Length: 232
Image (cartoon, rainbow, N blue to C red; front, top):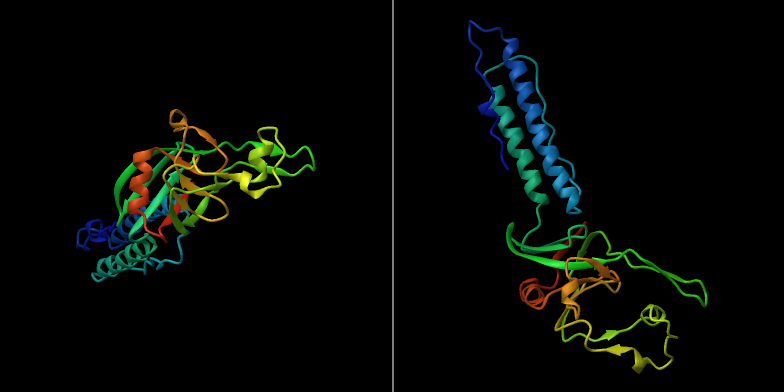
């Protein structure tokens, strides 16, 4: 968003004290700072820190060239903000509202209901080991994608059911629970399907992101490997 500060500036006139122009420019700068702070908050939600931006400086006096210099500074600030914007396809996941959004070059192309982590802590009664079933926050990326993914069930999947983890690795494989597609984000976190579609929109997972069939297929086909994922 570009703010043309010339709309707020005034040329000095004989009937008006020169100091009036300086205060008008200061007011314009305050307004621009408020807008920039709002954009900064949005970028922070997306996990994108706002790096150094050009500093808007007001010099003393009300010279006729001051509005032009301020306009240039505003353009530089807008360009710095634009450099922070992701390019191509990216996803945002709101873990509070359980919504997954797909953007392409800044345009929203898909909004989907999803399920996210419960936050429950599971403790292994044998040795005290604990797992926290949170969906991670911050910035990740789609590292690889798989059709018909197979889940190698970890120990906690058996302990949660009151079972001993099997010693035979073949007893861990589950080819049904993840649905038709899996998009892997690292550390075992996956965007995948679900057998429990009535629970979409709730915090019921062990940290992964669950989607309905149509939404999952759309994300799989439209989010290439390397796509950024912002979780908040």
